[in-house]
Length: 436
Image (cartoon, rainbow, N blue to C red; front, side, top):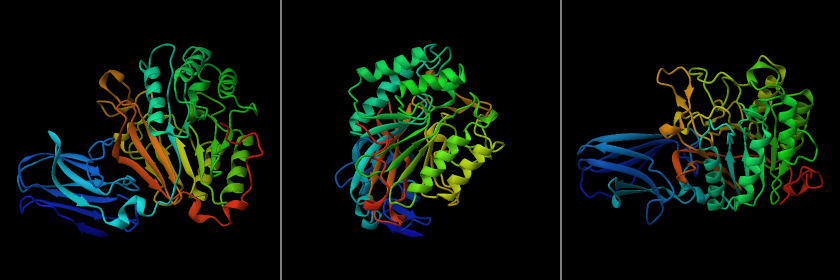
């Protein structure tokens, strides 16, 4: 545990402390710990990430606190949460006037992310569940998809990846995939977009759904699963596909051929100094990010009753520096089911919320409710990949602002390289290589 007390006090009773905890308490970029603010007067205050001059513009406050004079309040920063790369301070401001700085905490140099991140290698967006919908259930799906693309332009990302369900497929997917192509044609985002095959792609028939997905994704191998490599680093992105049924919990979703293919790719490239991302639509029930056994709101998840799910889980537990990305449940970031490594027994698992609109527990706390009219959010990640770490910044795509408590940092695979990166097996001579 590392405690810092770094004060700028207008009155003697004001204090701002940060106690860093966890196994990464001494490591740059890791925010896990407790921030404690004691107010010198009654008011409403915002705790914000800041650089040397001002509050970071594109972030929500870390917390908003209503305090009486002399009252203290603590704010918890969770497991593997991240300090932004450009943050050097925490500033306390008045909520009614964010330029009115009450006090400042300067982050120790060894905790500032830029001090040990290395060079920025590339950027991408990680999204899920766009649900373009010809029947109109997701009323703002097309608007939110355009906003997601616009956020990629604003952040200058090199590509986008989606964890499935680009379409809703309520009455046949062809019209919705045409909507997808039309929106892309109209967008100024011209970099690659790759997606995994989700359960909604199979909703109106497995054969037709797979055929439509393969065609819309322009997959040369005519299979719904494939891989891509990032051109400057060789980092590998593996896109799995639900193959069998609309309800992921009802059958063995992955063919033996697909699982053999995934296993061989991971075994071949895991120790070569590259990051490996495994993108798939549905989480595993009761395991990893996306849900919890103690509060299982969402039932339609991959089930360990089937051999392919067991094989997938074993891969996630064996190769602990993989980054596994899923979607499917639409759970709002505020539910805080966003990151897990199962207490260091598995790989880094990130759960995407939904571009179409997030879900939250129903009033009776028995299921996840979607109601776009109540302002549920369009959410996704902006991701920065550095030489020594990877940071997922959870964002509201409509407002283009980042949630400080839902940003996650991980080491990736580069620090476990067993051979020189220049000698790694090459993917660039295959039809799976990154293409512009």
